[in-house]
Figure 1 (tube, one colour):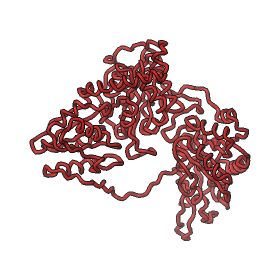
Figure 2 (tube, helix red, strand yellow; figure 1 turned 60 degrees about the vertical axis):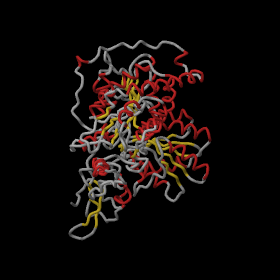
Figure 3 (spheres, rainbow, N blue to C red; figure 1 turned 90 degrees about the vertical axis):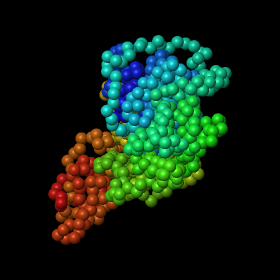
Figure 4 (cartoon, helix red, strand yellow; figure 1 turned 90 degrees about the horizontal axis):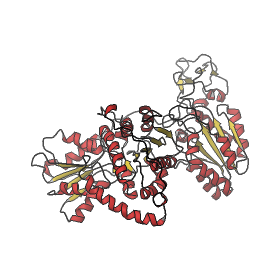
Length: 614
């Protein structure tokens, strides 16, 4: 797997400290570092899930200051969280090599945005590697560590989803081929280097610009950047530039042709390899740029063309020749190249994405038996008839927005719901405001908002949905679970203790699957003034040992449908009974985990352990 190859490459490069925060498509990288490396010894690696990306980057910077090679992993949304220390670190620099692996998510498949880390690289003046295959991801992470250490700078590795989650046979170094481990020098005090003052930043800014100009020339000779001559004379005046997975897709299609245009593969989009670009552009009339997300390569080529007054037309996203959003698929790249190379003419136009065959609708839903469903339902029942606001967050519980629950009125980014609720309440103080947050997100980014709410005298209820894991990204541990990434026992940080320490006088914990108690708790706590909290604690349905599946007694069921219509549990449905034509509730025993929430709703007690009509 691409993420495993990156982890393997980091271990081969001698990484000693690895930290991150889970986020698809980056998550498996850190997990595989833990898998491929011992926790101690000459090649031992400290691996941790940090509370958020900022903490991960800052801790890794400390390790790098002490001379150890460090790896930080996150997705593109996490880069927003880590941007403050990263921008400063670009000016300060590092001693031990540091690679910041940021996985971009074109599509987006599992993200709020289609951000392009290549753009952030130029913004922060940090070199960037953009792998086009699983093998190249392995090779690039090792090269990135070497460049980082040689130049004293953090370096981005920017794989995208289709590289992170692709599978491939990879040629890796054997253990005996690995370089001998080098003990870190340790931190050497030097306030002129490690203490960031305006004067230091002013001087280092000039050094950054000069260094990146040198790197542009140096990277032009890198094996990750390549100019490939045209095959045949037919397309000798045409050029194609691509990077990342777009290069792999283009190459796959062009390998089927006997004649091809001149090709330029860009594996290091920043600093842009200008010298190689000039060699590529010489004698061309028109160049098509294939890339995902932003028009980074296209704009860099336009700069080179303008700077050197070259008579070359550059087309791509800026000219709307290619799509400005979404992934580059096999079908799209094939269509782009077909039009670009048609009869030796350029007729790209707008290529419409292929229309997939019709598929049954399968909207994402909370799992059968998910305790979040019970939490949302309890709040909904307690607030029935009242003017209420339900601010959601990022995680499994975002799915509480779906009908019939319809309990997520806002969702912006991790931890933002708490401050959003404060803003709405200030404008509409007659609104009863709730802010939902998961247990992992509570530690990652909710504390600032809660402190702000207490300090500013807001009136809202913080609802912590504690299922004792980071469920959405694959059940990673966090400070509240009492386990580390390697499975070792760690101090369990108390959510209730933190809330009381912040200053909340009312903090109550309840099992959401005990519906009467949960509803009563919500009514009681929401009526309290100021900032208060409810911790709904029940284990994730995927991790908890399931109880016996419940069944519907067909003789008692009156077909009201309340269980299915109000909960939206995928294990529940209404089916027509063949002998009477009446619709009765049916429970799919392969999905039901016996949580009992539906049994508490049934007005006639038809759900339990009795017989069920097939």
